[in-house]
Image 1 (tube, each protein chain N blue to C red):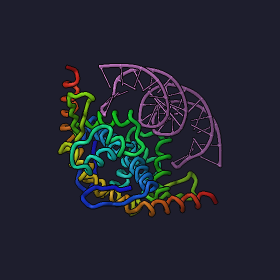
Image 2 (image 1 turned 180 degrees about the vertical axis):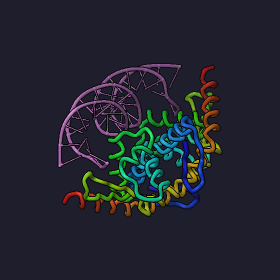
Image 3 (image 1 turned 135 degrees about the vertical axis):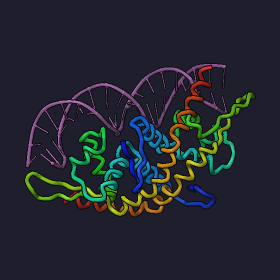
Length: 130
Length: 130
DNA sequence: CAGAATCCTACCCGATACTG
DNA sequence: CAGTATCGGGTAGGATTCTG
């Protein structure tokens, strides 16, 4: 199968294409990007409870799940300190940082055009009504 | 609320942040990017049936839904030719092209590291087993 | 040809309760 | 503190059938 993003071509097998799609869906899901972003902002390790506070609206269950996924893909590290009460710290890996760097222009471009898109939707809905 | 992607800060209201999250989720969903990509590759208008063929695995329902969403956000145009049988052509708008251009580096970076991520996952799963 | 409508299933995610 | 376990509502998305 052939994937073309510019004029050059990137060949991917169907399996690879599937993995790419999964990666994109995973990273651009509801919480992963936001969570990584908080970690980048911090610049260092963060405890579970702190992450829970700073990623507004996330549930404890989703935070755990999100962190496990990110850890599995090698985007964050999880460090357990054998203390009582337990302390667990999460930190971005270099891969994690890089992925955010690559994503940033896209993110910013959309953020700067939210009103633009809002208006486009308004026009479409109005048009549709008549 | 404050969103930080580099060291500079971009201030967003909660409503804007919500919209941004929705935009990201929408665009990075299962089909939108792939569909737009096929349109970019084509370089011109494409009929519904052609899109259905080229976006492998998509159902007719999802194709319709995806195209409606993209049209609503002003990322594709929909042109109906009053013929029998009907002909409907879809084409990327400038916004649609721009969004793909912004997304490209991210996409390519991940595509080039699929194996890398696969190995990371394998390591994680192995580690977890013991 | 380009869809609209319907039915059905999987799983995402939140809320809640419990544990080492 | 940092989880795990369980239940249930909502929704994304597939398969199938019908229509202008």
